[in-house]
Amino acid sequence: MTIRYVQPRPSSIVAALYTLRDLGVDLAILHGPSGCSFKHARLLEEDGIRVLTTSLDDKEFIFGGQRLLEDVLHYAEERFAPKKIAVVGTCVSMIIGEDMHEAIAASGITTPAIAVSIHAGFRENIDGVIAVLEPAAAVGWLSSEELERQKMILAAANATERARGAACKTYIAPSRGDLKHVVASELLALAHSGKRGMAVMNAKKETAYMFADELLALHDVAPDADITYVANLEPRGLPKVRGDAASILSQMENAGVKPELLGALDEYGENGAAIAAKIAKVLPDFLMLAGVPHAIAPEALAGITVFSVTNGPRQVAPLKEQGHARVIVEIDLHPKTLGVHEIVESEFGAVLRSVT
Image (cartoon, rainbow, N blue to C red; front, side, top):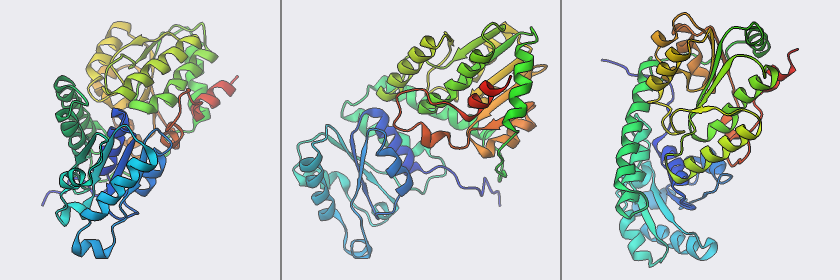
């Protein structure tokens, strides 16, 4: 028997919720037990989408919960007056065969609404994304061209994770990475040495609100250094993704960093080849990669001193094995970048600014 991995992996239900947020859906109803996806549902309520639950219990497990879902749909429309509603399936609703489309139709609500048929029994969380995008495209919430683009970049992100990311092994022990003050001193010494450097942000969506600070901090402490700045802030993607990219770029430019744009915030998985080509053109002696460093194949980094910044503790060991000299982890990055509209100071950025 071949075991793919035994470590916990992202949930397809949670991926569906994040995708609904990116689409501009302002209210989602989880059709399942009250504790399903509790942590992420609470966090997402700070980020522009209200998440309700039908709170199914053992009675509904046996007799069904369609009437309860209809009641929650009514409540949601009357109480919150949302612009768009999505009903999101869970393991329970899928197992007992709930017809969420029928519940939406029978409820009589007038708010535009879709049903997302998903559960947590998928090994790949991108199934949750596609489960949202397909019905959203069917009702005109995004174009067929954008749907196909999303499927392509999702496949690329999945391939990157399997090849060099946290899904590349059956089990990867988590690590906090190298000591930030040690890495900061080494990076600053190289920046002041006169050697050519490059700082690349290849971040996933809203995580860029903190990963951008890594670049700003390097510029703050070495404004005259020979460093080329690059960021994946091109204006493509779902509504929130485009808005975040424009906001972060404006803030970076106002802070004195005008990065070359390479890729969009949802293209982090497929952006490796383009970044590799840019590295080959610049020929840096040292390189800082912030966000998703493993998107770049190891052969593109040969002979370069690489400092990587990730928010994945299980990403440290693979990056070290791929030849990255230093790897640091922004362990609390994701909660700090939900619901924000301003660049958030990173822990490594703060340490780097403190080094003299």
